[in-house]
Every structure is written in C-alpha cells, then in structure tokens.
Length: 279
Image 1 (cartoon, rainbow, N blue to C red):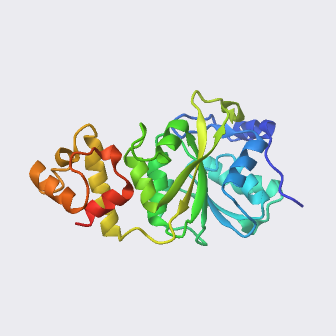
Image 2 (tube, rainbow, N blue to C red; image 1 turned 180 degrees about the horizontal axis):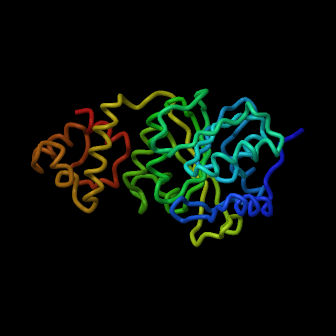
Image 3 (tube, rainbow, N blue to C red; image 1 turned 180 degrees about the vertical axis):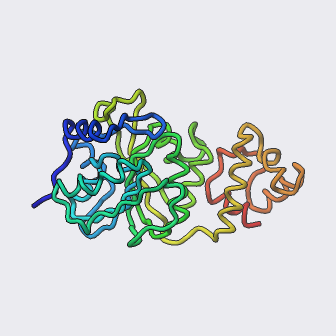
C-alpha cells in the first residue's frame, strides 16, 4: 500500500496522546498541510533512490511525505517522546520498517549517520538553524544537497549575496560548502500553532570539490568572524587582530591576497576570505 500522510486532526490527536505542548524553545510549530510537506520534498528533489536525513521530524508530517516518494529516511529528533512515537506513526501509515531509522539525539551532537544519506531535509527553529546546518555540512561530506524550512530572516541570510543588506558571517560560512538559494515561501497558516514570523525554504547544492582542508576552513571562519564582529570598520582594522596585530600588517596581508584593505567584510566573497586565510 502507498504511504499516507498525516492530517491536521491526527497531528493534534498525536500531540494530545503524547502530552506534547508545542514549545517555542524547541521550535515546535508542526506542519499540518499535506501540500506544504510535498512542496518541501519536491524542492529537495527527493527520489525513490535517495537516502535522506531529516532533522527535527516532530510528529512526522514531513517524514511521511519524504517516505511517500520511496526514499529511505534517517530522522534525528531531540524530543524523546516524539522520537519514540515516530516509528509507530510510520507503521500506521504503511511505511515498511526498514525504510525509517530514528536517532534520538540532539542534532548538534550527532557525529555519525547510518547509510551515508546524500540529501538533507529539515524544519529548523530559529535559535539552532545555522549551527545545525553548519555542523551537518562539516561533519557529513556525503550530504550533497538539501532543503530546509527556516524563519525568513535566517533563510534570506543564508542565501544572501555579498554586499547585500543581510549578508553576514552565516552567508559566508554556508557558501564555503556550496551554493544556496531561496526555494519558496511557506504560509504561516500551515503550522500548528500558527507562528508570528514568516518562513521560507532555502536549498543548497554542495560543490563538487571541497574548497579546502579542515585547517583552511577553520582559519577562514576565524577571519570571517573577525570581519563581521566589526563590520562597519575597514578590513585593515577589523582583521588586525588575526592578521599580524596591527592595521598596517593586516593591510599588507590583504594586499598580498589581492583584497583592498579599505573594503568592509560584507563586500567580500567566500573566495576572497579563503585567499586571505591561505596566506
């Protein structure tokens, strides 16, 4: 039998049975609209041959939409009650037992995934969305693409180009791994409870080749952090602490990397930062 999806009434019943009151701390705004979860899966280009890691499956509405394609899922859930319930919900919706693996853990502490999934799908709360994404991209190089639903502010920052108003350290760090794009908007009305912020889908495709070694990445991120901690200052001042100790020494290093020392951090691409870090 084909996999069936959760409806709004069943989601509320499951929450009541589990004594789950959606909490802002865990970002528990559950999606109750079938068209929306299918839209996310379509944006992620999930096919039957894919192995997908889903972060924060909650009650399973998006999980079932992924499984509906024929793909297999590794679900990482921090709420013990939800993690324990998810296999039973999947079985009740005609999911074969071997297609779903649940990891009951904090996503920020996960350092191994069974089966090396190549696609990431998630509905992430504001306070952990960027740290979780960067942790997974750093830790699991076999993740090749994905789509995450996040608050609009976070999604726009992740996909922002250099020089734009919302371009920041997360934009550069995300770009280290590949290209990012806004992949759609999500109505507030598809969530229960209805949030007071807008959400978007943001997608990524990992670069075919790594941009650099782990040591190079760490150095690049150190320079990015320094640049954006003092984003209104010229780079020769903002980076003096990590490029020699004085503005003059920083300017010399920046010129050696082909970067104008009078620019500001928000004007540089990830390639610029990587060149500076390679000195």
